[in-house]
Image (cartoon, rainbow, N blue to C red; front, side):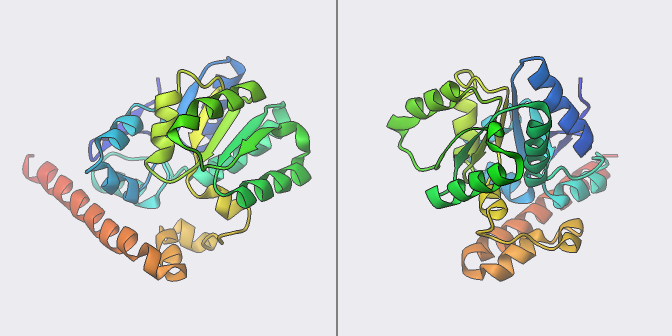
Length: 249
C-alpha cells in the first residue's frame, strides 16, 4: 500500500513523480483501473463548500500534491511529502511513456481548437499511434453517456480530462465504473498550456510556488479572487491546523 498523509482532512499520496509514474504504468500493464486527482491550495478551498467535489476527490485511487503550497503545508504540519507532483508534468511524462510502451490516449476537454491543436502537436511529436481519440469538453448531461461510449470505443488505455473543478472530478468519479480506460486523470487547464494558448510560469517561479502569481499578473481580473482571496483562506486554514496541533501537545 502507498503511504498516505492527511493534510487539512485530505488524504494525499506521499510519492515522488517517478513513484507515481511507476504506479500508473503497473496499473496499465496489469489491466487495472486507477482514478487520479491532484490537490492544490485552490482546490482545498473549493472543497470546503462543495461536498460533491470533496467526495470525488478523497475517494480517488491516487491523490497527488499538485501545488507547492500543499508540500509546504505538509512540512509545517509535520506530514512530509517528498515533492510536488504537478498534474501537467505527470500528463507530459505519461504521453511520452505511451509512445514508448504503445499505450493509446483519449483527450477530452477544452475548446475544439485547443484540443485539436494539442492532438496535432502530439501527433507531430510522437506519431498518430498514441492517439485513441479526442473531443472538446462542451457537452450536456444528456450527452454524457454517448461521450463515455465514444471513449470506450476508442480503446484508450489513458483518459485525460481537461475541465475546470468540480466538473472534471465529478465526471470521472461518477463514470469511473463505466469508463474502460486504465488510467483516468483530470488535468484542468493543461491542454491550454501545452497547446500554447496559455503560457506557463518560468521554472524558477514553479520551483518557488509562484505559478499562481504568474497567472494572476497575466489575468488579474479573472484570477484575483481565486488566488488572492483563495490563497489567504488556505493560509488561514493551515495556521489554524498548526495551532490546533501545537496547543494540543
